[in-house]
Image 1 (cartoon, rainbow, N blue to C red):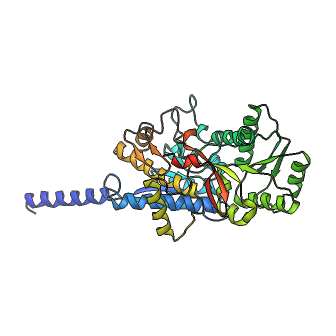
Image 2 (tube, helix red, strand yellow):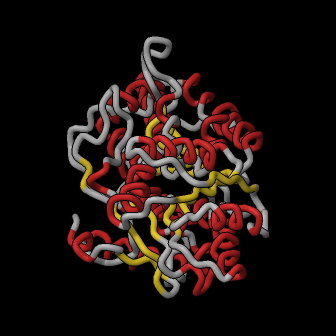
Image 3 (spheres, rainbow, N blue to C red):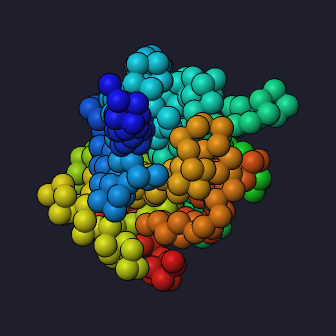
Length: 392
């Protein structure tokens, strides 16, 4: 073969190879409970991430490459969470990940991302310890980030609402037996202690429990003026319905999970008045939120998002990760982590416009000033305080 022709053929082959490589998608792991009692959170988060990824891909992707979401159902099970995380890393070769709805699953599984130096954004799990598992000096760098309001923020707001705003002196705590529930209970007790209050009853229940009579009777007999909760939708509905059966109605004030569709639907009118901290309420009170709500409703053929908070936090986490990959100019885990810790441009999200949301020593994107109190009213969550509707 003529040397010039051979050189040209080689160059064309190399160019084709490079083009194919450049077009390879960026694989992002996405895990959560897409079935079971936690599924309203998992499905809403997943669909929020999907929506953001489709918007990004429609504009050319990141670094000239499309985002490919590799999805796995962790079934809200710690062992399953470990399994799918290892699969995403070792079999699928993801370069970053998002998800973890349940605090227990996060604490069990995210260590594999840490070991592999793959950034992971917890976009729903709220346990206060989630971003603190891998801190210096033992771990010089932390690969775990978050876009949800941690339980330290939420417990303080719950207690503030009960003690400072509502002026209750006697409160009971009902929390489920999971890591999420028990870590949240600890945070509630600390927040109450800071105000000189000791709960008159502290009761535990299990996932799938359908009768809360014993826990409610102990709380009633102790003179509780309000029930503070840490659990998920189905069991929280049993608390509201249990009070109705006993003919005893006191306010429920709890973590953000009181906004889950399966609490609102299962509790019906008994859920009215329940209050919770929220990063996002499904109201189109900013142009970005209006756009997001309309796009979600159109894409998934729903009116009320099953878990609006999860959807919004999922959506924002995708944009934050994409911004970091773009800034890093690579999908290398170390470089993406460094970019997340020093994002130079603002990221316009649904919850807020993120401006340097993370630093090397702070991996919490959500601060107290971004969280408002929501209230269940006739099948939806609304702003408990009208003034909060104007927050941007």
